[in-house]
Amino acid sequence: MKDELKEYGHLINNALEKYLEAKDENSRLVYEAMQYSTFAGGKRLRPVLLLATYRLFKEEIKTAIPFAAAIEMIHTYSLIHDDLPAMDDDDYRRGKLTNHKVFGEGIAILAGDGLLNKAYEVLLNEIMKAKDPMIVSQAASIIGNAAGVRGMIAGQVADIISEDQEISSKDLDYIHAHKTGALIEAAMVSGAILADAKSQDIEKIQQVGKNLGLAFQIKDDVLDIIGDEKQLGKKIGSDEAKEKSTYPKLYGLDACQRMIQELTEESNRILDEYLPQSKFLKELNNYLMDRKN
Amino acid sequence: MKDELKEYGHLINNALEKYLEAKDENSRLVYEAMQYSTFAGGKRLRPVLLLATYRLFKEEIKTAIPFAAAIEMIHTYSLIHDDLPAMDDDDYRRGKLTNHKVFGEGIAILAGDGLLNKAYEVLLNEIMKAKDPMIVSQAASIIGNAAGVRGMIAGQVADIISEDQEISSKDLDYIHAHKTGALIEAAMVSGAILADAKSQDIEKIQQVGKNLGLAFQIKDDVLDIIGDEKQLGKKIGSDEAKEKSTYPKLYGLDACQRMIQELTEESNRILDEYLPQSKFLKELNNYLMDRKN
Image 1 (cartoon, rainbow over the protein chains, first blue to last red):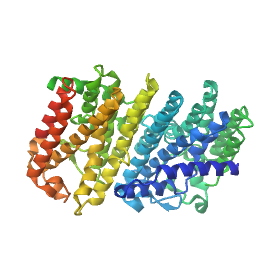
Image 2: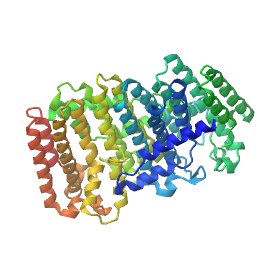
Image 3: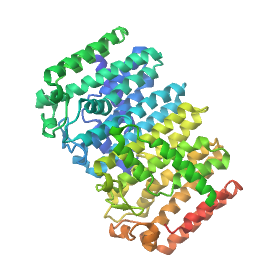
Image 4: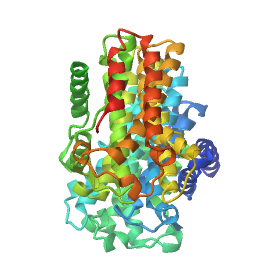
């Protein structure tokens, strides 16, 4: 798994560096802010999933790289805005100061805006160059819908509204499915579409994406209770301090561990149909289930 | 002019209403915030310019309406974020409370994000449906570049950095050309591209867009000094209070009036080549030069 992860990481980072190169002196500061959060040590989960899913169906991944970079820019923008004082008000992320702590709130808001917009500039540019614009615009549209007010933003809004409130398991499912799940699912689905996968394959990949997104979020909640602060690069217990509703709070830790395992096993059974190409995704899936940060 | 302005206004508002209809109860609040600023009485300058430019080259404008709505959503998002305490910190716009004063900062940031993202959802959807995806994606890309860190956001960053500072006329040109000019120019250029105009026509339209954008901004600066507060719906003198660099401050009011007139006349000479279709745009141009708000 490690070799492929390294290969994907290189491809993604090179593309991001190219897209985020400052264009002139007047706007240098916002580029610096965009670069700061983009290269602050994220796992690159979404772009890796996009590339690895693409590779289930096609070997050469050049076409998919701009999409991988775009989805990581969208993810990074959402983190910058989420960390703002008006939202989650976090000073640290992955052991580093958050964007607004370094650049100030105004520039942090604009850096987020800039990353979101740049993602679409990249996607539109790919559509213009495409041999088959229909496929490429479909894949871009999947990402667009997942990032918007029917996806990630809806989850963030529901999360803000539910703060300091008891919420139902249904509302918690809504928040997770939208806030984290939508973009993870979109990474895999758009990768499959881009590789011209058949519609029955896209449906199966979508199920894997749904499971992975939910398992990932439950694991995050679990780590916030039993994780190691050094390995996590942040303080644990922040959900409880903010009285956030989480899966462990609603179901207990043991049930959460079982859910993570079941979701992962179901995904792996689907991925078995795509062996040997799916070997990496299965390993990644298992790694995510057991991860410490 | 009034009949066409009314027709365009209806088309734009109907499209915006359709795109901003709440999808579920959990995200209702962010839709309300998006609607609030979108229907807060804006002039619809950018979408009207897009539609009217399209009509210089093609009569039926159905194809252009989603583009007009998208560019207005991008403009509205930029206003919501500009008004935030971390940016311009404005409590009122067009005589109404700003978005964050009504919905709180967190929701206002998300409403801006939601509008920006929705604009691209709409554009990508149009590309997928297009008979000629190349033309449609080119037009979308023009808007994307103008809205991003090489366009509008670069202008906003330069504006923030220059606050409380003496700046050169070159820096002021940069701020205006990017912050306001880029999207106005993009409205006209994308309208022309979408209507399949020839490249020499697109170049001419681009010059009109540049002039109009600059004249519009100088007029805004002038109105902030000699405008009528009731007609403007906001207090005058805010630029001076914030010690902002403006054209009147650098060149004096008389020179500004002359610049506005010269830019408008040059645009009208270009538009004369497109008569009778350009009658509306010429009238709009003259109206903008003489406007009181």
